[in-house]
Image (cartoon, rainbow, N blue to C red):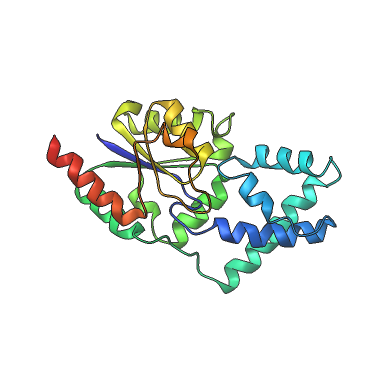
Length: 219
């Protein structure tokens, strides 16, 4: 195994809970009430797909432009008063992978600007040689496109790449691309269908180090 590909939201950063707050705020601004539940419905999908899900949920009665504007408004205010919460073990894992010469990539459904802002604010961008974002591929997770792009950018066959994910859509995207999918749960626990396709289910990013060490010792 030569490479590790990271999802971002809910995997590297504890942002899914922030999205619940954001879309509670957005829902009230749009007049449909608190809509934080949409953060769970849209786990792992890109912005275009998420917007379609909003329209479907609220019978096309919302203004997509206002949805975008209010979401940006919330996150700009949040970033002024809060540091981006980093998931347990992230820096330990990144340093270990760098030391062991793994190739690293990000495959996030979020828009490129948001991904780069998050990586830069946490000083983690320097670890990754490829960053593939939701607005850089046509099809959203669970389609394999984003992972295929990440593997291609790393110059690796998907079968030689681990993918770290927290959502069903993300895990199936990695699996459909041919990567070995590892789940670190965040807001969602795996169902039986998901358990059938993952290589491992670990509690946090620190546990990934021990998982990799076992595999390295077997080689």
